[in-house]
Amino acid sequence: MKALLPPISIGFCAAALAQPAAQGGAVPIDSVFPPGLEWNSITTSGESVETRFGTLALEQGRRCSAEPIFGVELLLAGESIASLGCTPDGDYYIVRFKDRFQHGDTDLVLLGADAGGSGSPPERLHLIVLAPGAEPRILMDPEFRSLDGTQRVASDGGELWLDLGFREGALKRGHFDGATFVIDYVPIERMPVPRASCEDAYSTLGDCQQRGRGNDYSELTLNELLGLVGSFSTASRRGLQSLSHYPGFNGRAYVRMCQALISTGSMPAYESFESAVCSSDAATP
Image 1 (spheres, helix red, strand yellow):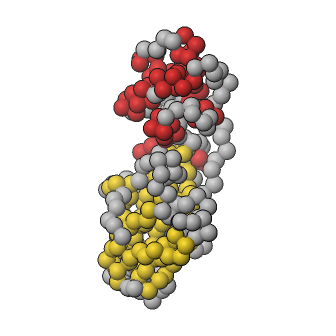
Image 2 (cartoon, rainbow, N blue to C red; image 1 turned 180 degrees about the vertical axis):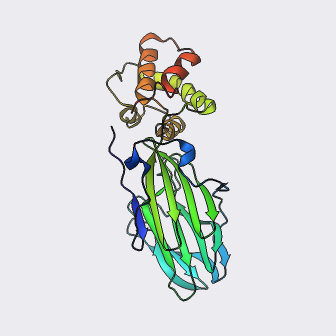
Image 3 (spheres, rainbow, N blue to C red; image 1 turned 30 degrees about the vertical axis):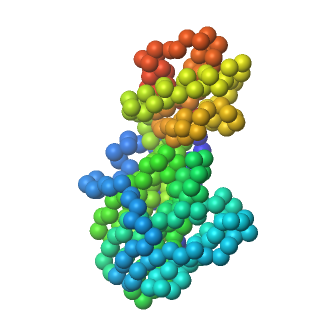
């Protein structure tokens, strides 16, 4: 059994949300969030956004030591409230504001930042908290990002919920209760991979075969295979990296099918691939 990923506490006196895993293991996907939430995809609004406390804007900051990268100044009503950027992985090459929410007398603004390249890490998120009589807060952590591209948000009264997709078979969940922001990981019961996603994975077998001629991948995990330089095109690699976190995807079965294709030259039937790789019954860590 995999060790549970620890919750990430961002902000003040953070206490982890109750982890269902501690109450008996993996849970159904529909029990992770409170019922009745109205979900929306996180959207990008641009380089400035209006709030009840003034305009939030972005401005090019100082040059980082790794030229020609620059930092980013976060401004509120024309005054700098934070300096972002100059991270080793260059997360702040492209920075944009996203959604804004009003919770009572508090404004919450999401901000996204990424390095801009096709092989870059997933977009890094931040939560800006503006409240009367208090200094602006920018809640951020390198783990505040989605590994599979899922970015959904729901606002419920004084609370904000975020669905950040899957990581190693667990759902990555964000929760802000007005004072504390916590990210935790909820192990999810195995479930079949959606057909469209399974078909996308099936379509990468040809790429795996073409680039793997003469190689023996039989002892590798999928993550090890994905880590080999030249083993996949960028598009195939990114798709499989995202899908590898899904709680019903069998990475080892995928590697076996790729190796069989390399060895025999015979493409497996989609139905066989689906049964071995994308079926919840077949899924293994």
